[in-house]
Length: 115
Length: 116
Image (cartoon, rainbow over all chains, first blue to last red; front, top):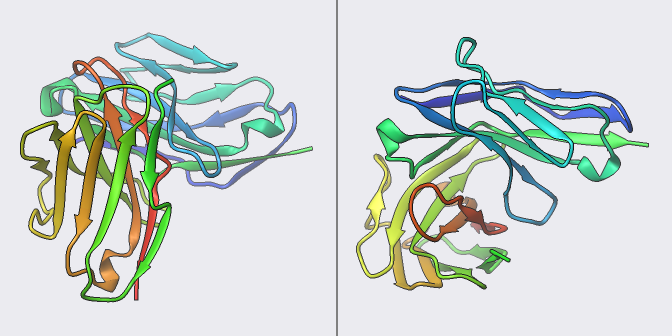
């Protein structure tokens, strides 16, 4: 079945540091890939997405590239801020197995950014 | 826009009682709502998918008689945990979507259920 694996946290960085959160996936069909972010006390919000191989999703300085050859969708940001502190979830939606409806999530990675 | 609320945000109940959790889309009509369950340090697990006016579709391994889902209107879905036991203690999250499968899901903030 479909699955998503992402690095365990927490990840603690200093402000302005470079961020990478690794995400790899296993899917039966042709997945779309997502990164969601959950700020304290709030619901998950879509951060960025990519629907096909080599697509790059980007938003708020975050980027992730859909790499089919390595089945990866790593999240990166060049310079993190304290306000980026949150839990980040990698997810996929497989049109073949879930009709595009079902989201399969990774375990989430907590990011803490310190001054 | 696209705000989803959940009520209550946390609840403590005694073993054997039932608990109802509400999920509301505040500024849009949700044709489909989803219920997830999250254990500590684990991913969100989809429990069921519900469309307004029809029976929910449950994922494999989820007891539909224990987790009753009602999607009575385009802005409200409820999850009732019947005869709750301590192993039902978890974080329950709903999401809502309008339109077809290409539209993203909007998530509620979650409800922490503790069964004593």
